[in-house]
Image (cartoon, rainbow, N blue to C red; front, side, top):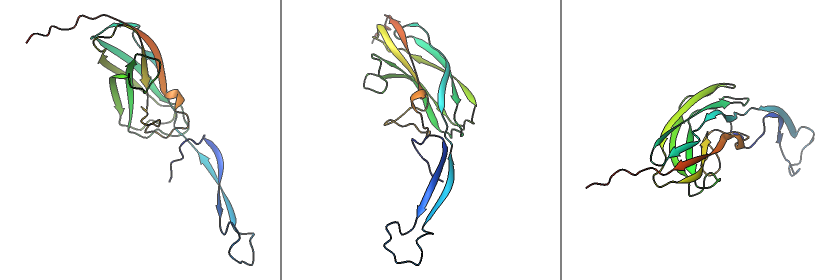
Length: 173
């Protein structure tokens, strides 16, 4: 068993070659190549039906819901992490992202199966203006998530959220 990252699902051939460069003297070179058919299947996690509030106040909790679906041709094997972040720009994964929360998937997800998600987390204090909120299934570390998918591009949903000033709590000592 092997994991083929970045390989599109479909039919392929694996070639086995002996004495590839003809360095070994033989009576026949005709039997030095064997081809074996191979079918590649791959999970494909996607985000469906996201519900994100359009507005929030800094320092308050928001609830974000979504459904993660495996639209691939193979089961998505656990564990992986779904993550919600808020960002000052439209780029996921750079230094200004602040995690609102994360959910760990601890069970496999069969082909065509879905899992409903709900996460409640706090909008950071001091935020005011329009921000980008990202939902990321199979959160990628160093560009690749835990689940070996051919297409990681559909693992992310993004929308804007308007954050209004929130009165910070009293700092009485």
